[in-house]
Length: 509
Image 1 (cartoon, helix red, strand yellow):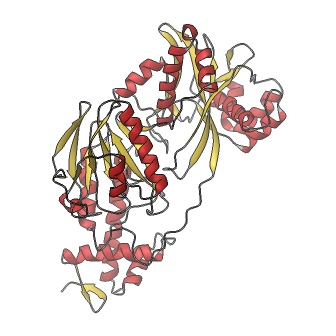
Image 2 (tube, rainbow, N blue to C red; image 1 turned 180 degrees about the horizontal axis):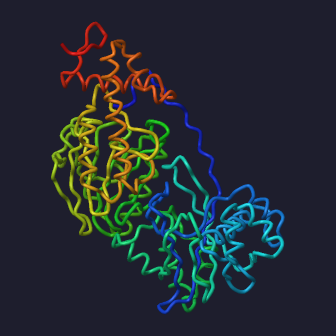
Image 3 (cartoon, rainbow, N blue to C red; image 1 turned 90 degrees about the horizontal axis):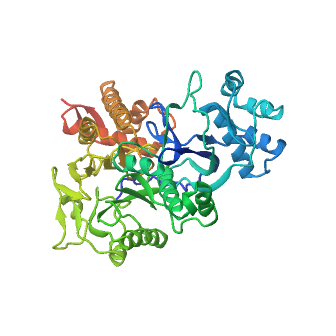
């Protein structure tokens, strides 16, 4: 059972170009030990708004040109990453690396770089901006997982200054609005309590740093960084969208531009876990799931249930093979259980059901429309939202399996609950759900109205109704827009607005 309509050939997705980027792990000596600089991203940022992150950014052509020309830089990705980082340091926090300390940048010189990043290179070349590379250490490189169509190979560089100048925000527009210094333990504790949002790769790096500092002689940050750089932790890094929410992107035959379905392991390490939407059908996907399950089990975890958000094939994997990886009862709506082999252990979930993992309550929400029996899981940290809304691409409402009116009502139901984050089945997390959900609701209501307007204007043939309704989206795929137009028409028919006669559509009598 699939949401993809007949006649639509899923295009072969080319692997996205992985772009280089760099981040600065800046540390200083604090009263309670080593402290790391965190910067708060403004709510208007397209990615990770309202998150605390490290300074940094994407490598540009002029960063590479600077690295090739300036002394002390290597002519490779590392050199370009360092040039990028020094430019970003000037722009974002007002710093420049001198030979033995971090210095505060003259405001007039800083303003030139803020206005145009290309100015960093000539200012560094003439000595107006120090650009000493000797004290930077490359800790690790982390690549954006394939759940996102925009991917980065991010170099995390460390720079320590016992007592650096206080960072400052630039005049005018900035991607940050606040900065603070925290010990790694304090930052991780704040994240675990959902008091502080931190992007997934930085959470795993914090954990790695904490372990390395304990291992280092006298807790030396230099030794800790050296340990991580020369002997990085083995195994794949966890993708943790929030405390107790690990994302496992599994390759599936799903609607482009998505290429993966997000399986989730809920629950803290060493406790009880629920696996949501284990979707793998391929050997590679099954092996990936197996690795993640073994990590959870080896940490003392226990899989108590498998939950499916709905019954589409890109969410329910090869159950026979998955049962060889782990065994647990299946919890799902009655509609979803209809397509799953019967077991006395299976449990039919209904709206309002609850379960608890590591002290956190999760609530079952009935959210039909995309598919009969579609459910979401709501917790304090956010909502596992299935196929309700995504940050990349769109969501289809299959005419033979969905209901547009129910779908819009379910979107409104989720929005009114005001979840702090959405953890969707495809693509990256949604850190501002209200913004995303309002976009979906407004968009679908407008399309619904345009379909009825078309029929009211005497347009009867479905392809012509689709052309009218999608007049604002000329690049829409012809098969998909007819498919979704039919979904709108069937909902209008159920509501008594239109009728079908000999394959054409008319206003109801």
